[in-house]
Image (tube, rainbow, N blue to C red; front, side, top):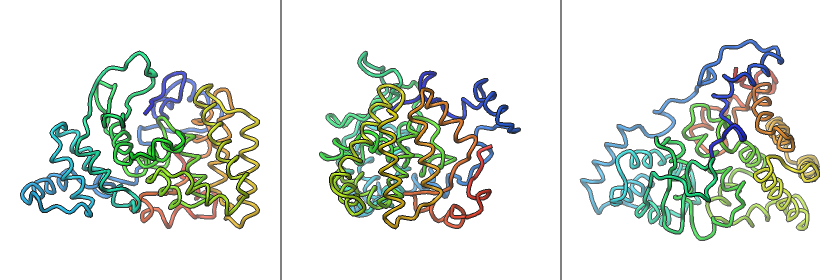
Length: 354
């Protein structure tokens, strides 16, 4: 997982306090008072995930009933794996316990693989080797089932990001496109753990926008199954229902190339972006897929990838346009927002950040 630097995307929280963003805000004629939560927070710990008190109770219960756990039960799966893992400290265990809701919501997860990965996982706080990008704050190494964290103080959401990689890693997920793997992983972190789950303010804003577009095109269930199994042909096959096979193949290749260029050069090529937009717009317009404002919002956001200062332009776009309260994976988030994000009045559709 990567964090942003001055040359890459900085968090909206931090950038909102800098002269650059203040200038943008002033030019937009917006008067506001900033706070770290954007003045908006719909979740607390109790209804976002199991509480620490619940975690402690479950640990004690399972420890007292050793040998009686059922791996079909997601809570038992995590607790049994963690209790039997001698490599983890209490902070790491508590962080893993908080992933229960995420696992319970996913019918495609390979529970035996998840159990095996958690049972032997080691988490190491260490320094970066010379060949590791300086922006990388943590990574999961599947070869030896180890998470390396390169920060002195381990942020829980950085650790959760890498833990999700660990839980879902199998012999197939390694070959998923990077934008897809990281985008789904970080969107899961956002929806299950962030105070504002609808804005990506750290490392993968465009990857998440792309995942949301794919969810609108082929369905959230298709995206989740692809991520959990590592089988990209699931999305490809779904795309062939709305475009021919050659076009579906080229479409996925264009997306790969856009994100490769963005990661290598800080922006996507205009020609690739144009091709991507032509395919995507055609799918929504000609195949009976509901062309909704959620798609249009994420499409316009994604277009910023072609700009030289794409990171700053992303932030400016969100500040000026707000964000959509539409969840894709979290069942609790869907329940909370189901009456809100489909508002037709544009003044209500957008929840303004500021």
